[in-house]
Length: 380
Image (cartoon, rainbow, N blue to C red):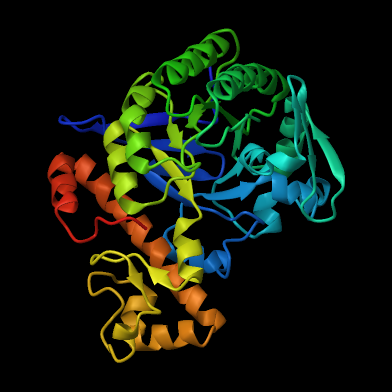
């Protein structure tokens, strides 16, 4: 059975969908689900302090093993007391294994069943990871939740490549489970299979066999989505994937941050999400809003003295006008990215808070119907 340090408590379910609310206990605090995790790739969410993140109500941050391994190095992070002390963050941290980053650099990767060799994007040096190496590095980083090393194919990809990724990722999950011995770190296995329903089920079957034959995984990641496929295609296969996973464990959909896709995935039974979308779009001068996507480079905002989003209570909306924010964007001021990042993160965090409250009050279906009929539904 999974570690006693990580207990997932199911608190509410929706009678019209697979949506649910729960609470995942970790050594650094509880994660109330559904939950969105901002991405702090290099042990920082770009432009924001940990104090600002706390004030926004961020429950858990994501760090990336690939980037932290290359710079500043996992050993240094460990010497500093782990990621929590290194970045002054006292709430839960999840570290992604870095598999997505490695396989997105396909031209520099050499892959075999034992592991992966790759080239540093910093200095061109060559490196080799086995699943055991990856667990050791994530142990040094000290995240509360760690992800298995997996193979993440692009989309579209030849059937043979996706089949190989399913088999290899399941085998690596077994090796990661055997290598990961720290009871204060939860290990999540990762489902692969692209958009092929049969391959997704094959991946789940392999992981559940590994789960039954070992001390078990504390949760399950759903990878191989948000790699170029249309979100509608993802959603066609997602519901069956989620429902085939153990209901007593958290389910984490990796790399999804479009507000509407978040809600539809919650309806499928997903508990946790992460994505760079809110901060990346902020740096591009765009904002989430109740009116849909706002591109502040648009001239129509030049003399608009109203709030960024009248329905939002974040500091950016409470204190600054659209005209001022557009001025910052057009002037390429750093403050533009900071304020828009604060807003976009607040938007998603508040959305998840409202979704959770709707689930606890047994009114999620109405909430979702209202959202689907609103101007907020758009492609970011």
